[in-house]
Length: 254
Figure 1 (spheres, one colour):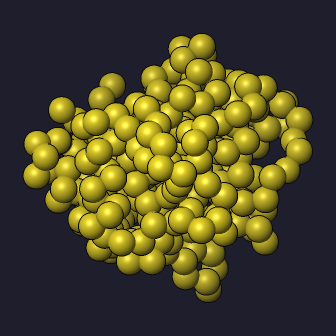
Figure 2: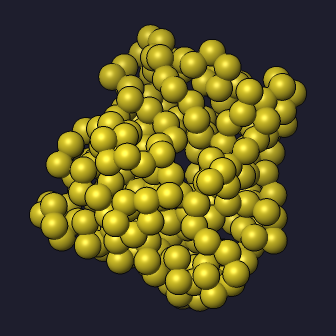
């Protein structure tokens, strides 16, 4: 059995440091690198690509809304054509930096509010899938398990990876609990690792109300900005390995 372990990284900006990229990178197999719109800048993008390649981690684009002040977590109303251009632009920017460092992108995972909106909005999901296909049809599109984004990627003929979150709380409908909700962010290493194994092997996760949700787990996310992210990532990787599950990036298989 195989699964990917990914992390959102490269979210520092200028003089501002954010997240524990150095601590998380040794434990993951895929890195979702911010592309300068919700976070990151050209220098951070380049250094994060180098960090990922140094640890033999697959490199992917993490496009978001053009919202540095809100860290891409505020919902925005963007037309489908504009959204397609916005996503393509960010993928292209990171692809160029990756090429300059002798590597290439393997996947795309939308960030924050864009990710959550595309999970439920087919038109937005279709725009993202079109942008990915137009830039590079070999890229794997990451999306929330059971979401519109996964369905749009499949309709577009892309390879997709259904994503689950070991360090986030779920609502009964399978969506992520909004940040700020009690239980929305989990920081206990033992609890997060146990959830990761349950999602990977049992294809289920327990919602905040105690109900069980069926999920498809191709890739598990650990947020680089979660408190104690490095320890969480190590604990998740160790638990998956102990359960006989190999950690492999889907973006590496072409």
